[in-house]
Image (cartoon, rainbow, N blue to C red; front, side, top):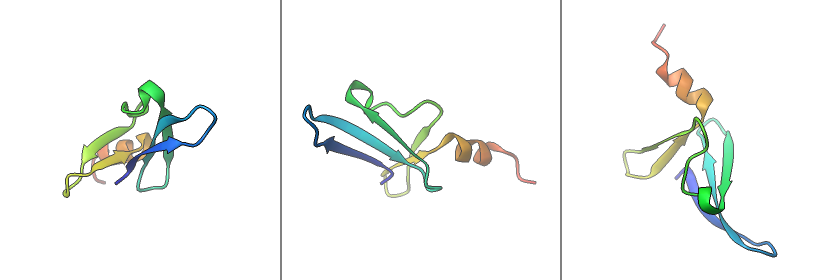
Length: 67
């Protein structure tokens, strides 16, 4: 799964969502924004119905026509 929801252990705990692309790029959202993907990130369902996050760079490469 490339979207993980975690409870951050801090003086004031809050829920964070960590979005990880297959290329290694990561983005974190927290609080009310945890369930909303970062700007320009795309989240799709994989073949096993798990959320799959794709960073803007990889999404742009996938949208390019094959050479």
